[in-house]
Length: 105
Image (cartoon, rainbow, N blue to C red):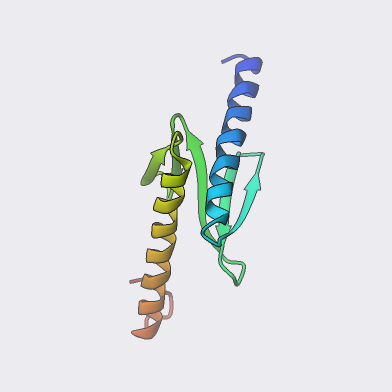
């Protein structure tokens, strides 16, 4: 890949992640973005990192690449990410309630 192609790929990823950020903000998340990766991250109200999202080819990927959604559907990706975040928050709450201090289910 040439330097020009690499730059174009980087610009594409930034554009796609920016579209995703707009959708995630609609779910009320605290969202940040790094152009170095590039990547998007969601933090909890306490400032704890919840999830990191990156672009891999034609997909948004999160949770170590285990979850993905097409970049052509940022609204659908945001909904899937929101479900992931809310499920993890529910699991952590349930684990704390059952006495598992590390938050594992």
